[in-house]
Amino acid sequence: MSQFSQVILKPGKDQSLLRFHPWVFSGAIKQIDGSVIEGDVVEVFDCHKNFLGIGHYQIGSIAVRILSFQRVVPDIQFWIGKLSKALALRQALGFVNNPQTNAYRLVHGEGDGLPGLIIDFYAGTAVVQMHSVGMYLSRDLIYEALQAVMGNNLEAIYEKSEGTLPYKANVNPENGYIKGKSATHVALENGLKFNVDWEKGQKTGFFVDQRDNRAMVEHYAKGRNVLNMFCYTGGFSFYAMRGGANMVHSVDSSERAIELTKANVELNYPGDSRHEAFAEDAFRYMERSKNRYDLIILDPPAFAKHQNVLANALQGYRRLNAKAFEQIAPGGILFTFSCSQVVTKENFRTTVFSAAAKAGRQVRVINQLTQPADHPINIYHPEGEYLKGLVLFVE
Ligand code: SAH
Image (cartoon, rainbow, N blue to C red; front, side):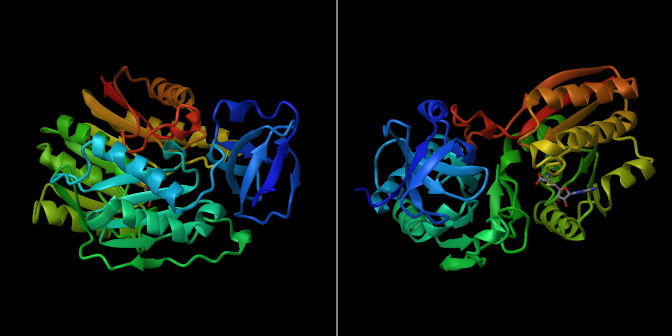
């Protein structure tokens, strides 16, 4: 008898796992043999008792998140194996010991075969965020494996899972250092400096997923009047400045975000009067602003976290983009994004295009953007492609 409880699926419900999709929905389960508690490792079988995979059990619509389609035990060797693979990809991508960029995503959940686990690396500090109870309960092994794999490159580990685990699971995570203390909070991205506040900031402290898209803004910024809407820590703004923008305005409704943006601009371009920042609601700012911008970036927070609010979210994207199309100067360039997982690429395009039509502007797509290579997409889990962006030339 196995040491793990066994989840038996209903007839026909094994198909998605046979195609390596890593989730078992609660409705697919026929029975569970053994006493299981939330966060346990379980083995999953089809209705004929053929083994399908092992994973973390959780109460909710996704009942099991698969860790392996092989019959393995998730011991320290297992975790070292998984994290080594994740690191090998980042090494192949040139992120490790890179003098220009020392902020990257080391583990991207399903994209690295580790559903429920995010690890971002910032200049020696690994910020670890668990999104499943199973990952949280596995944390000691994960930290041990992380140290084994990263060796001297790792100065500190900061755990940040308050607010990312189901409240009812009652595991009460507390944010804090697991190992060491970071010597610096300043990281580098393509040679630009920025302060990462993993203790109080959103997500793990910085949005590393916009790295390549920021570089494209730099490429187009020369001589332009730039509006960086939803700027958070100002990433797009200091790239635009390096690209030779004429003026850069950063806007975010959060006062704290505006402070962070100002500090980051100061780190790179002290005293540069081309930059100004405003703590204000996006719609209100665009209503009142008399400026004619010819490069606008719209990178709003996820408007839809769940399928059932999709229609409202699309309406939000339409209104927001329509405002930008009304405002932007002829010959302007609009970078527009959606990071909602439930909004598909097609949905997003249709919404943005209808906003352009509503504003009566002639618009051409010049680039189509997505998430960077350190946020890989597991081909058996296409939902992992969450970041969508369009670069539009507006006549
Ligand atoms: N572009 C950023 C990430 C944006 S995250 C980067 O490159 O790092 C989304 C941001 O939108 C958050 O900082 C949040 O404070 C801000 N925000 C949310 N609602 C807003 C609103 N109504 N008006 C302006 N900003 C808003």
